[in-house]
Image 1 (tube, one colour):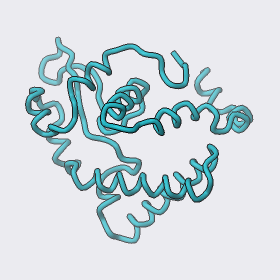
Image 2 (tube, helix red, strand yellow; image 1 turned 135 degrees about the horizontal axis):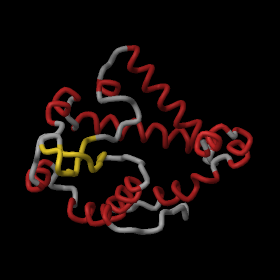
Image 3 (cartoon, helix red, strand yellow; image 1 turned 60 degrees about the vertical axis):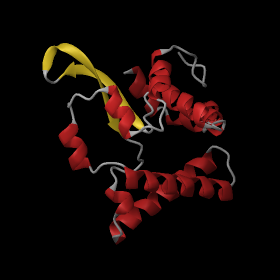
Length: 180
C-alpha cells in the first residue's frame, strides 16, 4: 500500500521532478572506461535496473531442491530486437516514440533540448547495435533453464570481465542515491 500511495502522489512527484534521478544520472555520466562500465552494470543490477544482462536466483527447473543463478540477455528499451531491426512503418514509429520519450525525459531532468535529443538518439543507436548481436527470442527461450558452465559464458562473451562483474554483484556498497 505504501509503494502504491507513493507512486500515486502526483503532487510530490511533480515537486521533486528529476531530482531523485540526478545521482544516478551523474553516476552513469561518470562511466569512462570498461572497469567503470562493469561497476555501473553491477550497481544498477543490484537495484533492479537491468542493463546488458538480467540475472536472478531461483529454483532449478531440473532439481527442485536446488537454487540456481540465471543469466539472460536484455538491454532494450523496446520489447525485443525486431523493434530495432524490422524496417516497417510500425517499427519505425516505435523507434521514433522511443526517441521522443527519452528526449522528453532528458529535458525534464535538466538537459538542453539539443543534448536531450543527442542522448535519446544515442540510446537508439546503441540498442540497435545490441539488437544485431543478441539472439532472437525464440533461440533464447529454448535455452532457458539450460545449464551452462562459466567457461561457455566466457567463450560466448570473452570481452566481458565476468569474474569482476560477479564479484561486484556479490558485494555490498552504498548506491549513488544514498538509499539502502
